[in-house]
Length: 416
Figure 1 (cartoon, rainbow, N blue to C red):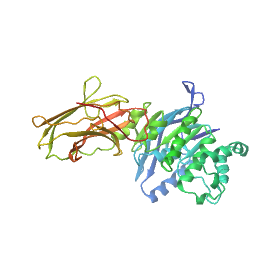
Figure 2 (figure 1 turned 60 degrees about the vertical axis):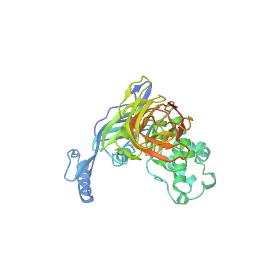
Figure 3 (figure 1 turned 30 degrees about the vertical axis):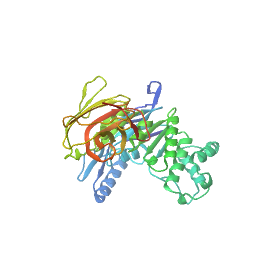
Figure 4 (figure 1 turned 90 degrees about the vertical axis):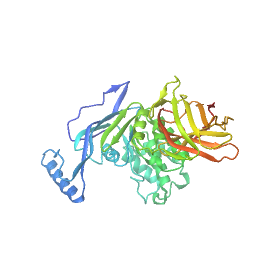
């Protein structure tokens, strides 16, 4: 089965190969415009329908109150690949997904999809609320192009994957949002479509089921092409082979290196200004980072996964203190503390000499997810745990990585 959505002539991609993987999704210069108000939208819609009926081409220029929701977007996805489609709210992701799923037609360009397509675009979309979960399985599978006999062969696997055995014969209207996600994903995943489109549905539900779904996507990639939309860069780093970042309807960044795309996504968020607490106790002279070659690292530099870095810190002590312990925090763009490097854990403490506190830290290997991180520095009085100084957003760096971690961690590092 071929699905074709186009307003221009397209060529046949069915024999396109790269590394023996055929192209299942091809978008060429796809553009879509909308009107900013309902009255204009209805007016232009009627005009476009009439022009299509009489065989006239669509109006390609922007009319009054129109804007481009997407402009000249091109990409391919081959069997065995997972494309991350990311961007901030309003970037054009939902519009593109609706065109890929056949719900909208592009005003310019063309889209060609080969094979059976399963799309999880909106939570609960496609479910009949008064039918049971079991009945909705058959309905959804039929929409995907599967026969009743094929569903019969898979029905037990679908129900087991959804973990809804005791609720499968209850009406879907009684399901929670998480249960609907379980059922929808189970149908799409177990029927093994050629193309699977997933939009943020894995943001709902418990962690265990999300991990289960991500593992299943990895299995599907042997024979399917997947488009994956998520604001969770941890999920993106785990399953996606390449990525596309949209900004205001246009491609901002596209790369086969998923870490590069994630970094571009994070860089679009403005970082907070530096914040100092305890400036009456200490004054920072310098905070210098060096790589494994002892070369100084500039702010915003890219550090490879598992690389060690060296941090040199010098402060003027404005108060008389005894021994102090220090910490360096790595905080991601979602403002989560991901890595805590503590001298206390290394059984190291320090004292100022001639009112100057000089510190040197060699980190353990940085096993961090891809993305941008800000560094914070903290001084704590040993014994009392009184916080004497804190400097937030002191340094920014980017980790290039395909590594996936599900939580934060603490290390000691090597202090002197």
